[in-house]
Image (cartoon, rainbow, N blue to C red; front, side, top):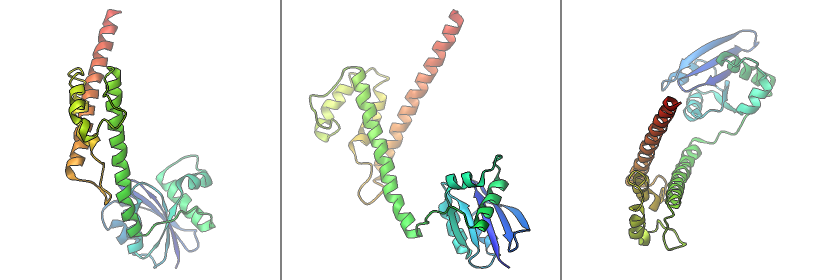
Length: 238
């Protein structure tokens, strides 16, 4: 007996539709996301059974368990599959059933699944790129804050270079007391690289990024409270 399977995956569970060879009998199965649960469920089916899986953010481990069960994972292009299914109502069961229909008709829009070692290797540059974006955002935030108060350093080069650290600290001290907190917390992370060429970067660099983020959140929360208080007083003034 041959089977085709569609899987609509979510963060905490996956909805499976299993259709037998004649495609007249299908059953819906919900599998909670626990390590080994999907592998145990799919191990009941013959080796090489195709499983259509919609591409989502957490598909890595789901594909691994499909492959460990001996089934063939087919990663689906979500945008194209949605247009081809044409469901007016979007539910887990309808999406999973739509994937099996496309798979049965031979029109399933699949994308390439990189091998496991390639997927793991890609996470290193992806993480470094994400940390670099945070570093650039912190630098831009500090530049913008200094510009608001017409403060600058006598240089056209990188003001976050070690040789300018003393003057940069003196300029930051000229800011209002509340405004000083974000540059002071972000200055260390802005000076350093987001990660080494080998990957993630050092622990103290990651700590600096977290401290900077917390300072920004604290400052923004104060601004939010101030705005709400002003709005409340304006309401009474009317």
